[in-house]
Image (cartoon, rainbow, N blue to C red; front, top):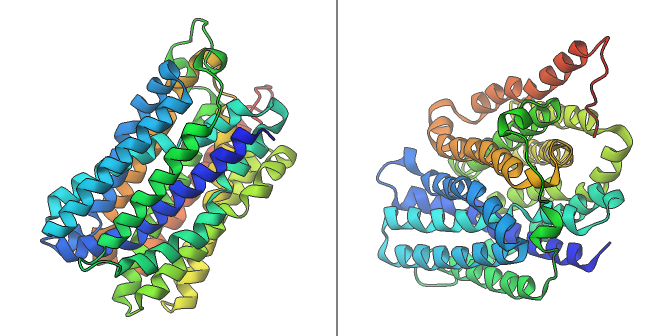
Length: 392
């Protein structure tokens, strides 16, 4: 495996560590600064909104300037967001804090393309393993992110200010790694041919399955995950328990990445996606059992596994839906669809968990989790007697 893929994995670890920190503290900051408790997850939503806003520009910028310059630009944007959010915490200003998380989200949006850069940097035969290795960087983040959230929470006189100083340090380290990394130039990865119309690309079965699976997997996971700190706080659990639950969840999200590529290559993306969706549904059912720490841990572990077995195979399947010259627009379309959904679920998490409660919210996620399985079954029936190719 090329060294550049390993360094991308390290960048992914730093990115996800910062994301975990934000997941743990942003809803709590929101509940402290927001004028109404229903808006407590709004800073999380603006983070995802920033990510959504970055999806299309990030892909197009990287097609023109290259992955490395694009990642550096996104990292710098994240640092600006950290500075704005830190200043807002000192001033106890809710709207400026949301602006800061929006800018951080833009930086994260550029970083979400690390997995596609790994595909380009690795030989074709190692494509799925490269995706798994980069996403596996989240395993380090599963330990480091919650630890950083705990020790930085009260590290400054202003509550949670230390968390954002720690986030800035992560982004600075990532910036140094990015400056040292070598990635293929855009002319070597994006092609120069005549692309097909985007409408023709997105109507392909491979794109439909990949985009919908990633959309549902990430949306269901994010809605439940964002609601978790609020639900646990409402159930009387200590912040340390919240951080530990998020830690187990993120570990479940990323630890299987080291084998998901092998499993996808052996069993195919559709079977892996079906397994992931089933685990998401089981997570929703497990949330009906109890509201103790163990109940939250079990549900969030299953949620993380379901996300991994849905999102990673969907990423590999997406690469089969486009030619090199169509890469930027196709990836941009996929990321926009996925992270628009994620932004919406983050915004809805606070109001829904307050209105419905933890158990009912998760019960409603069970049928949503099964939608990609229905699409896969429908496509399988539709191609009986024909021979279209949808494989992972």
